[in-house]
Length: 556
Image (cartoon, rainbow, N blue to C red; front, side, top):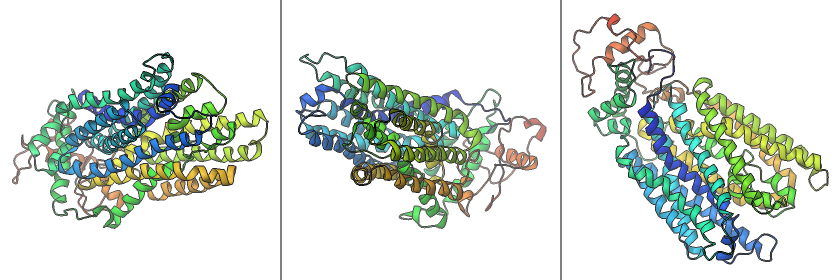
């Protein structure tokens, strides 16, 4: 919390956030690298697979789908694992576990001697990716201040974009490896091996990653937690750590209150507030899979691009889409790398402005933009699909990229911020795991169900997308509360929790003074003394308080 409205980011805090996000870079790279892998001729040669246009390509197409499907299945297992280990052993240990599993999976894929070994590697890599997809944004939100939490957690989205981009450009570079070389399979093995590098870096430096102070409080390790908060949120204008004291004071009060409400089995579904959170997390992460994120089957050249619109599919099948458009050689790989590079700009923009304009605002703007793109695509494909009208078909392709713009600038990074911050401290790992699991589960459904649906009803399939997208907008408007600027502990009041110990959002000056007094009572170990003692005059701490907080027990 800060004494002024100027946004100040602690350099150490930012470095920790970026460092752990290398794990999500590897997660995204592992998801996307298969898109570059299937663009390498040597991959088909080594595994004796038919290429596009050859007899037997249907088997190859099914196998490529399986490579993505088993990866998502492994990710769901990883999400469920993270829900338990993040509480039992801590966020840091869970990050280490996810990195270790991802390294094993990446090594198996890179060194595959047969397709069975490759599939096994994809499953294991998916498990590691699922663990990191849950624990990294959750950890980032827990070590950030209320004012910077959106930007800090958006680093997850930025690293996802970097991971997709890295995979795209690596695939493009390796394409130029001589096809007649005795080591031609280097062109697809080397990019797969690089998936192991980011988690190796994180694992090597993991002992320097601080424990989450909120997890430490849950283990009654208060002194460690207090020291970490002071270190993470120190600033030159606050040498006495008044801001950190205020933040920790409110964190401690909430944990003391939470001890009276021990979580039960499936607690995330037991109360009205938690059921609403579960619904919101599920709608958020599964619903965005239906914002045009569908896959096409073997159709005509131009049809395939127009019916496969969507970020998830574009990242996994982009190279094949461009090949189906008649592009040959390195061009599909180049175009795939270019569009993923564009998404970096959108995610960075989100990080800069999501704390100013709010999560709900961004989600609404992005979803409305994506839905409008789908409506235009529906009209254009209904009119021009199957014709030789180049202008009409090119207009439809434009709206594919129009879709991507709205997605990466407003939705992509925002979803990770929101799904990890809406849960109380003692349920955050389970709740975040639920949301991310729904993301991977929905991706399984869309990638499997969409192709036959597209074959049966063609362009009318867009109507199937538009209707859920409109419902998605309505759900965001009515069910999703705005969380910007609030501490993690007070967000519960927005969902109807009746045991929120304190608030600081939108308080009066008198309440600021009161919270400053209480924060100054903390001992060096972070404990509140049972008896009060003489306090310094308020003018002595004026300008140092750093935050807008207040104790309001039971209501906002």
